[in-house]
Length: 426
Ligand code: GLY
Figure 1: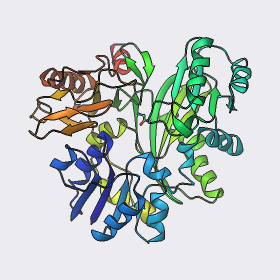
Figure 2: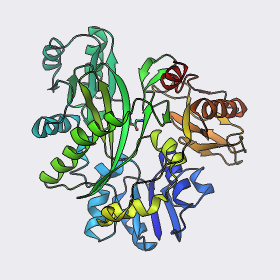
Figure 3: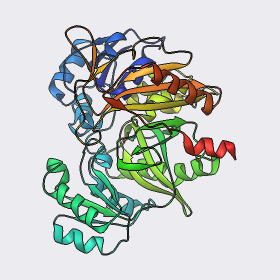
C-alpha cells in the first residue's frame, strides 16, 4: 500500500511510526513532515493546507490512501478534492469537518440531534457577550468559534477575565476564527477523550485516554492543546464508554450523515463525565494530540488496514482493535512561553538518543539547523512517551527520559497521570 500522510506534528510522527510498522506498507510519504518523521520515511515540502499540491503528490506516488492528520487540512477541503479524484482518504469532508471547525455549528447540531452538552450562547458583539455572561456563573467558558490551534478556549475565573477573552477573540486575536464566540456552561466532572472510526456507515470505538489541558501542575494556568495524556484512563468505566457510544458517538455519525455529509475518518469526542452522564465538551475531526501518541504505543493491531477500511467503506469487515495490556503515557515538553508566545530556536540535545526501555520520543515542534542540531520551532515541542506494565512504571520511564533530555528553553508538567495514580493509591 502506498500511503501519503499529511501533517507535521507529534500526532503525525506517532501515526508515521505506527504506519511504518505495517506489513501492508510499500511506500510512506509524509507532507510536510518534521525532522522526527524524516527519520522514518520520505518527506515532501507540501503544506498541510495546499490542497492542490497534496492532490498532485498523492497522484505522483500513486497513493492507495491519504491519511489526514490535522484539522486545518480537513477545513481546507482536502478530503473533498481527493474524493473527486477517487483517491481513498482517511479524514472527513469539510462539511463533516464543521463538527470541529465551528463550535456554533456543533452546538446547534447537538440541539438538533439531542446530544448532551452544556448550555450555550453564540455571540457576535461584546454587548451580546456581556448579556450572555449574565446567564452563567464563574468559572466562565469562552470559546472562539473557529479553529485556533488549541488556543481558542479560555476558562475564566472572573467576569473581567471572561470579558477580556471575548474582547481578545472579537478583536481579531484568532482572525476570522474569533469573529463569533461561544459562551457556555462550565461542566463539572472529569475530562475524557474517546475516539471512534467511521466509514460513512459503520462505526467502531478506537480507544480512549485522559488529557491534561492546563499548562501547569495541579491543573493550574491557561488552557493548552494538551500537556500530557495517558491510556488506559480509569475514568472510562465500561458504563461510561457505553454511554458515550450510544449518546454521543452514534447520534453524531447518524446526524452528520442525515445532514448529507457522511463521516469518514476518526471522530474525537472530548467529554466531561458529569453526575448526569457524559456531556460533549467538543468534537474534533482528527486524532487528539497528544492522545494519538499514547494510543499508537498501545495499539497492537496494524493501523493501516483500519484507516483504509474507513476510507473505502469496509469497516464492517474489521475486527475490534487489539490493545496491548500495558499503560502508556505521553508528557509534552513545551517551549517556555507556551501557550502564549513560545520561545523559538532553543537547542535540544539527547531527544533522538535511546532513552531507555519502552520510551519513544515523538517530535511535535522541531526543526533541524544547518549543523544538524535539533531546535524548538513551536509551542509543544517534544512528546516523551513510554509504556510500562503499570501507569506508575510508564510514568517513571517517561520522566527518567525527560531527565536525560537537555532543553533549557523547555518546560513540562511533572504530574501527568495524577488522577489515575491517586485512584491506584486508593
Ligand atoms: N489534546 C486535545 C486536542 O488534540 O485538541
